Length: 128
Image (cartoon, rainbow, N blue to C red):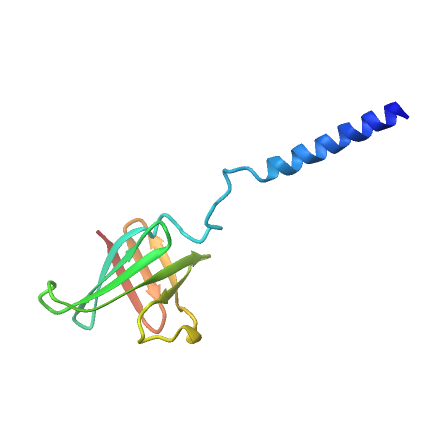
């Protein structure tokens, strides 16, 4: 009986150790939703407007649209983003877009310091 208890305790310890090893701290804390390739400031020109996107490693982002002089900000917004399987989703904080509508989404392709986005039309972004 004592031997069965000892074997049972040994098996239990192996199971507990296996479960603890599966919960190691080297797992992605963000669930893989922040891709380091997108982190930084990106710019593009669209119909004469100079546009900047800022993506931070904490999942926050910003958007700035400039006048033709590239100094005067005509519109800006802030929000949070996720990039999963080349699908960029952004939840903007402004009142121009209702949270009920869900996030703005686009397919992105990042190659070094160039990013293309395709929603209704394709834009080419350069990383600063």
